[in-house]
Length: 214
Image 1 (cartoon, one colour):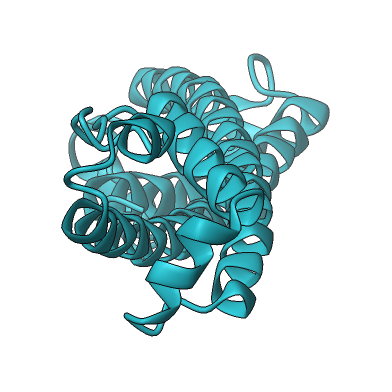
Image 2 (cartoon, rainbow, N blue to C red):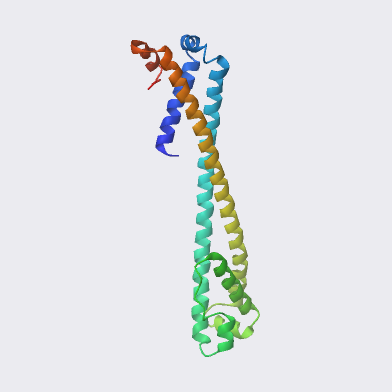
């Protein structure tokens, strides 16, 4: 949460709860702010504070899911580059296998195209013993390729999770902002109301409670 938001939220809390506990002030502004309207302010504060906490939690979970995906993606991308390096060495004079492994293509930067290349590469290796035999010489065993295939499935799951968490974080942020604006509007009106009844030295009664009208 941004410090400025927290400061304003705390000012709002002091305002609403300070007035709620001060019978003389409540009686003074009662023609405009009834007991129910003052209680509404407390409800708006609670709703806003809860939204801030939820947004913070969702933001942390989104960041964690994104880091997990990025770390796993980087690891698998490095493995694919390693496979292609070995493949280029062994199959530089074999047009058929080079084409099958798409060694003449650059590794795409975009995830969908990269994932397609990775899936096609692994599939080609698994279905061709000639490729497996050469890769095994560079410690890229069939077992390692099978494990890589499973990891590529896991990677898609991690991506979906990261996207889901990001969507929930964005939704929580929007909800927090909506409630914050609503609560700040309430506080602004309440301060304007107090300004009608407390002027000059009378403001000290509010300042004792930590309430600043302007």
